[in-house]
Image (cartoon, rainbow, N blue to C red; front, side, top):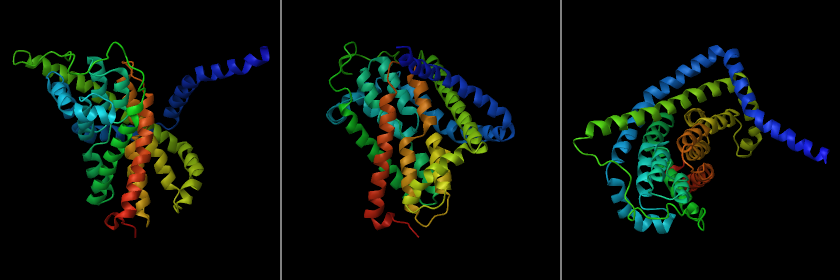
Amino acid sequence: MATLTKPRFFFLSVKRNILPACFCLFTLFLVLFSQSNLTAAKSGLQLWANHVLPSLLPFFIATELLSYTNVVVKIGEVFNWCMRPLFNVPGCGAYALIMGIISGYPVGAKIVTRFYEEGLCTKEEGERLLSFTNNSGPLFIIGTVGISLFGNTLIGFLLFFTHILACLTTAFCFRFWKRKKHSFLHNYTSSQKPVKYIPATFSNLGEIISKSIMSSVQTIVMIGGFVVLFSVILSILKQSHILDFGAYMLYPIFKLFGVSNIQFSSGFLSGILELTNGVQQIATLPIKNISFSIILCSFLLGFGGISVFLQVFSITAKSSLSIKPYLIGKILQAIFAAIYTCIFIYSFPIFNLNL
């Protein structure tokens, strides 16, 4: 009996100590690669200040302000006819989907969490919404990836269209998520129970704006911390050659697709960790078969990266919403996005830009 319990205790011990060990290694690597880490942290901070902050903060404030009105309920009443039969979610999910698409990561997750906290959706509906409402925005896909990185507006529109198409496909797949399970406490539609908000009036306008700004700033600072953290983590992985080892392990898979440049597997791993760095590396690599670069970027845009995953996790952690459907949903969306992009590229000559 004793010999049977030893492996169990060993694995429990490993599970209990793996995070402290990782944190200790991270601190050690911060000291060992202090110079490169400092540069990476500055680069991440500049990325946040110059791009993330100005693009996301206004949308965060706007969504906070709208939460003090009945706009969400009205949108729910308008779109309930299609959201319920197609995706098995309340009509207010259309608001989260639209704002998530317009604003980009992680606005959709923040809105869905608020919906659940305010009683606009059940736990199961909130988890379904999490799987498809958190997306990359048009400014990043069309502007940054399409125009700035690939130098082609058409590629940007293709990536954005397949991104949304993959998002809706994922939403339809998740309509069956916990279909037979319902939360008793929140088993109602938006039209049956009012939202728990303080109505915005001219007398409390200053207070509402202040609260909206404070809540938005708290979220945007948290995102900035993740951007800096993962910039440093990527620097450590590069300096310690761990990223090179991972790229070498993936290289045979990429070689099957006729890609002989190992930098593609390195860019893919970087994108799995942090989206912007990976997409930038892949899009700027010289290759005759540019279609492969586009399809790979489409996959990474659909997945979003571990950095965004942890951002969403930090937002949903205070609620009882499970992060599992979000992770599964992003994996599905990444696969669907790559498939749709591949179909469009090889079905329509206008999208085939191979040299």
